[in-house]
Image (tube, rainbow, N blue to C red; front, side, top):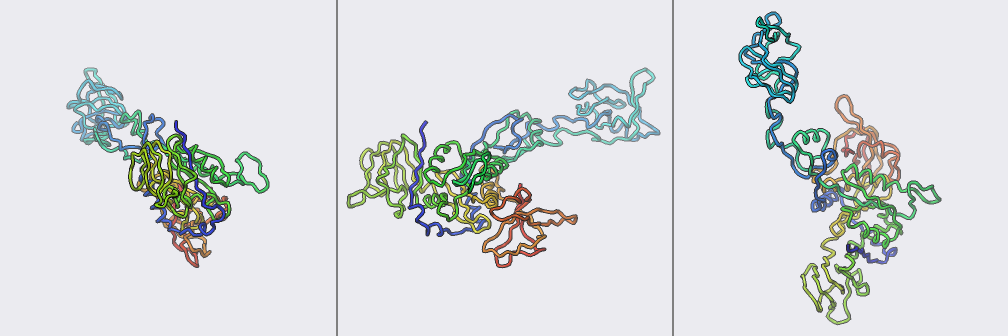
Length: 514
């Protein structure tokens, strides 16, 4: 198997502070639409799983009824199958007397038809005999013996056609839709699928999400605390949210504030992950390495190749300020030509060459025996700042066809960033069109009057009033760095930007948490 190598082109990390602050904030709605548009092009494929394992999965295709259901007219209770016309006038004072011609158990078939003046004993779920059009419950009957010694039944209540009978096809007709593609399979769906013979169920393959926490201050959860160090709880919170979204987390541990270490770790997990989530390192501090990596993606300085397929000549990279797609450098000749020693296919934004000699272009020098895709075509930053609190540094990119989310290291901001962007992306990848959080209107029970230049997403408990109104009770300990209120949250109250926040009694939108 070929091994992937990831390259990161440094842009004077730690000295380019102006680049850190030069990040245009986009509105949350715009950022979400960019994420969903990128996710639309990603699918993880499908797989067949046994019926017992399909609960909680998303259907990969629309499933249909393989027969009518019920497949035959069946009795809804224990009693007697009769002709409604024979018992139309029956009453406790004047019961109708009918000869019993058969007894039908569930799973059995009647050997005699029900004709005028006769009845058949029948059990719940059994097929209704031909000729019968009603079932009288056992409690409204009494056993009797006719003069010739044959069994009879006294019907004490009038019956009507169709009484206590589930007709064939009452619930489903052959070919009816049981559940559309993208449906979250619940226990009721499992019952339906079993009913119609789906021993194996086509489901979406769970997206696999690589989870990293950046920061040299982080310790494993089981480690004792040390001066200046904290435990990595974000990874585990994000992993739980990923599972809640129907995906599979790959916990990759913590990374130091070193772009080369991040590049190496990405290379190791690349073929196993469909999506990448990092926490921390996205702000404007000296050691916020994810911000540097995102800036490099913007400038075409991040790529990966497969060892044995492609080589980038590290000595001939174009300076990053030239913003050439492959970070090549001009050769010494005056017409800025680069030399390619190429025995395969080189694909860039301009041409595809089968080349064994020299190709003049403004790119890099490659020793290439395979296919090398243009970087700008497959890697781009979707946004690196969002107009929201908490979590304004939240960022997202498409990195060679994979979605990368760089969430804040503060747990509150990390939580909000996941709900607004990562969960919708995971749902959309699994075929869910309505992937954004559901919204309700609620009355604010406590003022949130702190001014803010951006919309705020405040952790909130919802209280449902007897008159149908919903109250939104903002929780304490809801600062970006605080986690105490995350577990108690029912939703995120959206407090509009401005100089006055929102007062008690005002109506606000609340994004519902799953």
